[in-house]
Image (tube, rainbow, N blue to C red; front, top):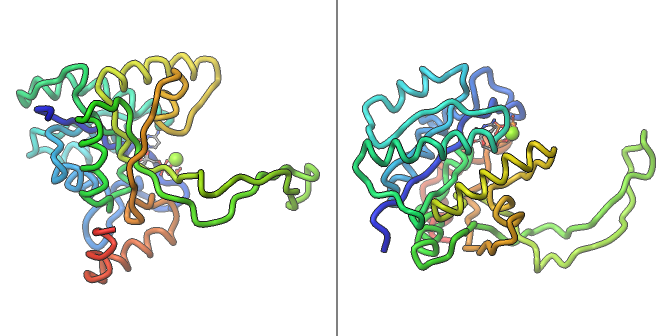
Amino acid sequence: MSSSVFAVVTAAGSGSRLGHDTPKALVQLAGVSLVRRAVDGIRVAGVDGVVVTAPPTHLGEFEQIFAQEPDVAVVPGGNIRQDSVYNGLLEIPRLAKRIGKELDERTPVLIHDAARCLTPKRAIRDVIEALESGLKAVIPAVPVTDTQKVVEPVGASSKIEKVVGQVDRAQLRGVQTPQGFHWETAMRAHEAGRELLAQGVELTDDAGLVEALGEDVHVTPGSALSMKITTKLDLVVAAEILARPDQYQSLMGE
Ligand code: CTP
Ligand code: MG
């Protein structure tokens, strides 16, 4: 059992698909902002210190939210999520020192989207416990429900595509956060990620950077509640879930 756990909560995006005037992480869901929900949710799962990446334009507002919480540091995010995560990781040693918690090569570090603010404790604990058992990279994921096809465009101007292949749905997983790594693995993967970006290669998740190093990534059960709030519809669905405590409780147990 490791003595400490850290997290980076990525909240520096604008939320262009949600379409609010404020950054997405400041949008309220049943009276509480997404970033507040995400930080509190990860804390109750046993995380000792959290670095929040904030949009540089709203840094002061985010600092204000967590001003009374010494276990939370706020740093400016970057242009893309990978830059934000990297900035967040760089702050972890300072935060560890400030709160007097140990940080070593095997310390679990979670990388979590503020947009997945309803992630249940069980899904987070599963990732932490897998890391503490010795696995170096662990991601939560769920089976996909739609049949999946591979397509190609039929012409530059047409909206119609052609099916060129299919994949066995049973083998596919939809990947969520928090993605967890041993501290040394997280840093090494993200340092390599800087190089990949410089070569024009952009990966969409943190585990992809570990896979690019040729190292194993393991999968724990995700949760329907870890849905990423991306569109207006997602916000409506999330509000509806919170308005139905029985449903919420039962989803939390799944
Ligand atoms: N994120 C970040 N830094 C960025 C971009 C995104 O920290 N430069 C964060 C977002 O705040 C979010 C998470 O990464 O919590 C997942 O990103 P996404 O859901 O795509 O959020 P946005 O980028 O804000 O939304 P959109 O793509 O619709 O603009
Ligand atoms: Mg985005």
